Amino acid sequence: MDLFQWSLLLFSILVIGISLLYRWSTAFNFHCKMALFFGWCAFWTANMSIFLSPILRRNPDNMKLLRTFIWPLKRFYGIKIAVQGSENLNMKEPYVMVCNHQTYLDLLGMMEIIPDRCVPVAKRELLYLGLVGHACWLSGMIFIDRRKKDEAREILRQAAQTMWHENMRIWVYPEGTRNKGKTLLPFKRGAFHLAVQAQVPIIPVVISSYRDFYCSKEKRFTAGNLKIRILPKVDTKDLGPEDIPALTDSIHKRMQDTYKEICGGKDVKP
Ligand SMILES: CCCCCCCCCCCCCC(=O)SCCNC(=O)CCNC(=O)[C@H](O)C(C)(C)COP(=O)(O)OP(=O)(O)OC[C@H]1O[C@@H](n2cnc3c(N)ncnc32)[C@H](O)[C@@H]1OP(=O)(O)O
Ligand SMILES: CCCCCCCC/C=C\CCCCCCCC(=O)OC[C@@H](O)COP(=O)(O)O
Image (tube, rainbow, N blue to C red; front, side, top):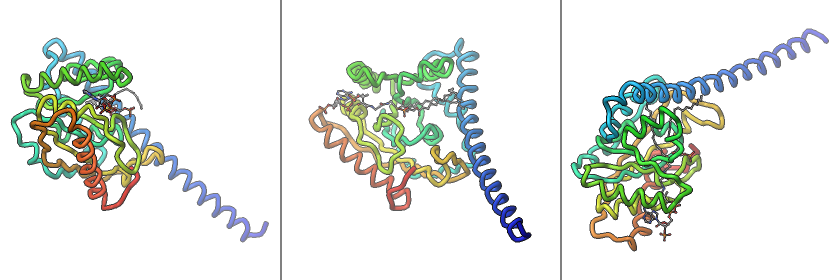
């Protein structure tokens, strides 16, 4: 091989090496940040469960603790969260909040705006995460088994009865699961039945796409900006079960349009 061929070979090795290193370091960075996320949540919930359970009773007020624990995470990650429409939460009465669900990181956005005495509806599997589950239970979260649909509806019916009595707000991810698609999934009806049964307003919340700074498939997680838009309340007064399909569809459409708007006017991949 002459000098030119040697230098070509060396150059190719360098380019491949640097791009591999970059890929590995991006993936390494991603895994470290995700480990921090789960480790952080596990650490604080375990502390809450072990040290505070003797003095705490199951109460939605304990959500304040989870909210405080989570708060520093966005700083570590360099995620700037811009909230629009927070005035729409200035209500004393109970309400149901519905929000789109993309990744576990939605917890950061949720805890940024979740009002006092508001608890999420969560999948029952969370309860089985030991001390994490216990802390969630202590915070008054509502657990449903998504496979036992009748039981889930009954749990929500009971929640509807206690919302006024206990002055509670409830946060539901109406897509029912995390969604990495370009558009919102069709909504499950539980949140809307809940609001109609309790005769409380619904407040739609939309979180913008994470794709600029986070993608689990590409193992990419950098600093970035997130927008949260809280939409005006939708009244459910005098609505009955027959109105639920139309109510669900109209809120889905508003949230879908808002998602598109806050993601820069285009369908995007989170
Ligand atoms: C440091 C800090 C750490 C913090 C760590 C932890 C933080 C943790 C945060 C946790 C975040 C965790 C986040 C998570 O875990 S998200 C996952 C859990 N959450 C959900 O799944 C909520 C969304 N799901 C629903 O709302 C479903 O509807 C349910 C599960 C209730 C039923 O499922 P199903 O598949 O059956 O629902 P369908 O909508 O297709 O409806 C089918 C039919 O049933 C009718 N129907 C529906 N509902 C009701 C009702 N209530 N009363 C009377 N009827 C009702 C409906 O009209 C329809 O009938 P028709 O209209 O076609 O005739
Ligand atoms: C480096 C990995 C280490 C893993 C250690 C696991 C220990 C668990 C520690 C902390 C748990 C934090 C709990 C975060 C819960 C976020 C709730 C959530 O967003 O659940 C997803 C659910 O809405 C929908 O579930 P699916 O999309 O149907 O599934």
